Amino acid sequence: MKKTIFLILVLILAWLNPLQALETGLIQERNEILKNAQEIKGYFTTSRDPLLLNSMWDSSVMAVSQLDAYFSMLGIFNTIKTEEASADAVRYISNWLKNIEETNDLNIKGLEEIKTTADARSKVFVLKLKEIYNSLKIKLAQEIQAVTRLQESLAKR
View 1 (tube, rainbow, N blue to C red):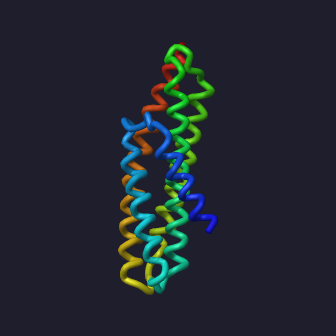
View 2 (view 1 turned 90 degrees about the vertical axis):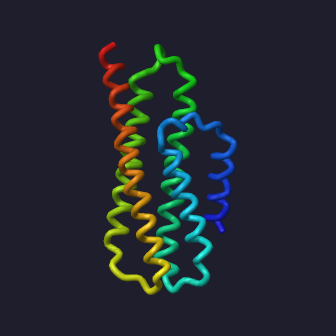
């Protein structure tokens, strides 16, 4: 029940927040993760792998929450004029992205360790989620590079 309420709150905040991070490319990955999480949740009752599905659902919700927080930070950050951007703010965003990247790497590692499932549909979810997380890994690397360039330009000031 708590997870459902948490997911609903995340969805409401995401819907109400004017996401200025659309150009990051991460929004597409976030939407894919959320869509997959909804499919996984719908399969809980009929699966023979409920613990595995619950774990994958939890990791998906956490990834969506982290990305939503990042988008919120960008919304706040984009309201600051470029001339007034502080190195601390950029460093905080950079550290947040690196934390998301670490969590994503753990998710990928966890999915790679799943060798067998009791249900063929669960295996499909594992493969699909691993593909989404690998795509997210690439987008995160690009985003980290962009923030690093901004950080370096602020350091030169």
